[in-house]
Image (tube, rainbow, N blue to C red):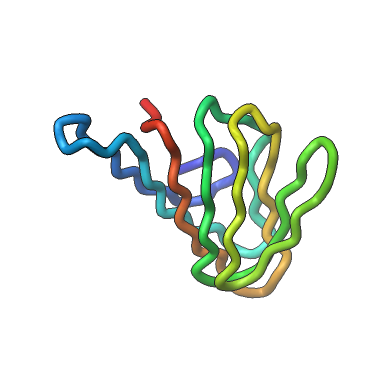
Length: 98
C-alpha cells in the first residue's frame, strides 16, 4: 500500500540480465492521492485506465487512459485521481529503485 491507500506491486530487474529498471503496477480508487515526493530515478508512467492529475511544483499534468507521462528525477509531485473509475498505471524507473 502507498500513502493515501493506493495498491502497488513492484518488480525489480536483476543486474545480471543487463536491464536496470524497476516496474510498479498501481491502482488508485476515485478520490485517492499520495503525498508529495520525488525520486532519484527517471520515471515513465503509462496510464492503463482512469483519469487524474499530477501536481508538480511548477505546473499540473492532466492525464487520461492511454497517456504516457515522463517525470525527470528529483521532480516533486503527487498524483490525484479525478474521475469516477479506478486509475490503473504502470511506472517504470531507471535506474532500478531499492
